[in-house]
Amino acid sequence: MPQGWSKKREKQYEHIKDGLEDRGRSEKTAKQIAARTVNKERARTGEAKQASKTSTDDISSARRGGLRSHKGAGGRTKAQLYREAQDKNIAGRSSMSKAELEKAVGR
Image 1 (cartoon, helix red, strand yellow):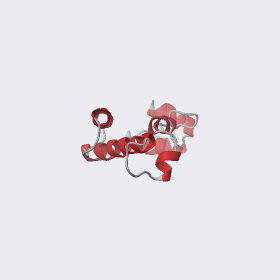
Image 2 (image 1 turned 45 degrees about the horizontal axis):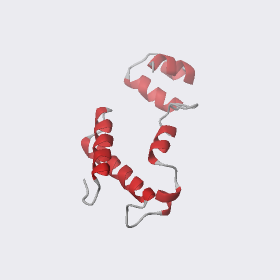
Image 3 (image 1 turned 90 degrees about the vertical axis):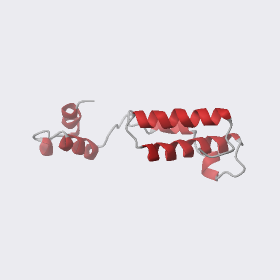
């Protein structure tokens, strides 16, 4: 965890990191994502000395994550569903439509 963060940002970092680890991300990846997220929020609120234009002009990390969580209208792609069906060894997956793959992999 980088130095110079407030207690609030340290708590935010730990919360994000723990949540990512709980969802199966490696500790190294979880640390990287959490640090980037906290640094972006610091830039957006003016806490950081330097900030890129995308950090300050883009939508917030929390909102962006919600939009990209694959729970929206499109959900997972057919290719993603196919790979999951392949991992689960579901028979007949090559001739299935996206809807059939969604039903077969279950979620």
